[in-house]
Length: 194
Image (cartoon, rainbow, N blue to C red; front, side):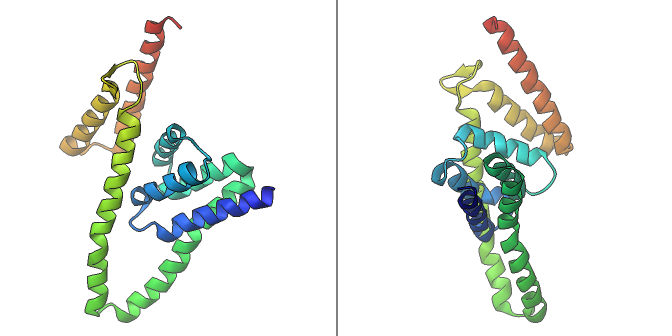
């Protein structure tokens, strides 16, 4: 049974690794489909938390997600198998593409193909952002108005403003948002009498 689970983990993250064009954020819809919809390894809420943790920890989001899900499903061997499945296609594809690019980089066909991938990557990142906004902004919370979590919307907008206006380090913004979220959570506990 564990061997079948390990094979499922490997094949799922191999598929994610094969079709993730454009980096971690572009891979989020694929990761969500495999983890939440197909295999039901995590709920949508757990997936949102997984992405938050994967973005905060060093390394690519897809690899961090693979390690976490693999460890949760099948322990250390699951983490290793899922991570291997996730990175194997990239290692192979990048090695072949590097060789081909060095050999044929002057061809117009190559530059046109690379330009054609840009809109696809933007669409995948937009899909991931939409999914994250749905799970983050439209959840029941203490400060909800009409089903919209006001605190989450406010933190998102303030974080975006701070990042764009002052070019502040994302680490500081993440840490500050975490502190504000913790304070809001503790206040909600105090207000509810728990």
